[in-house]
Image (cartoon, rainbow, N blue to C red):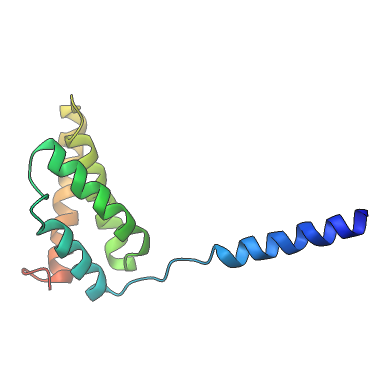
Length: 116
């Protein structure tokens, strides 16, 4: 009985591991195209609700984004999250602004002015 239980637990662990395969990583072009779709949507407004929507739509893209764009997307998401709070910490936003600007520049360099 003990051996059977051990075999079943091991088989279950293997099946679970096989089902949790990593998300395939996107190329720069694919990442740029997905981000462009999000930021060009009508829901991408500069008000708090729009910033929250954009950040939430960028999260799954960041998870599979190209190596070059993963960190800039994380910085942008964090900045949007703080900006969209009911009472954003202005000092924190000021500290985050340089990173946010750099992330935007990196995105622009990789994706081009038109976002490819």
